[in-house]
Length: 193
Image 1 (tube, rainbow, N blue to C red):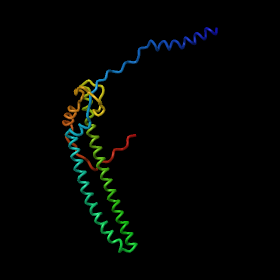
Image 2: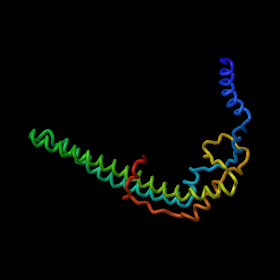
Image 3: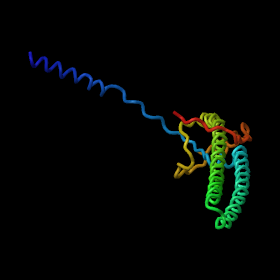
Image 4: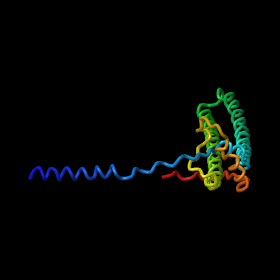
């Protein structure tokens, strides 16, 4: 009786093991059909990328000039204050030094806010460009029968330029989004959860 129960128990384990051997193996992954995209080139050579870069450069230069003028005025004020420090009463001296430091900190804060404002504006411009580029890339991938897209920076070697769809992507992006107006008052995107 014990041998029968043991044989049945072993048979119970043998059946699933045998069925694993006879079930068809998982399907092989599809053969890769790769296309390559150069995201940096798209940003640099597309009309919208050039438009964004030109606007960002103009805004950065304007901010630099504004802050530089304020900085020079503050430096002149600092030199004046250094000359007067020796003859000022201690309480007046302290008040003027505190006021000067507050103006220095305010200028540094303004520079940081301007830098952040430019970063947010650029980020949103780039995000808009990428949102427009997404469907273009999907269409190109479909047309080429590809199932994988690699950034050109990740490719070590390719013996054929036929993989690269950057030029066609730029042409289509130029048609769909030739320019973009930078919004310096743009709010930062909420963090992704």
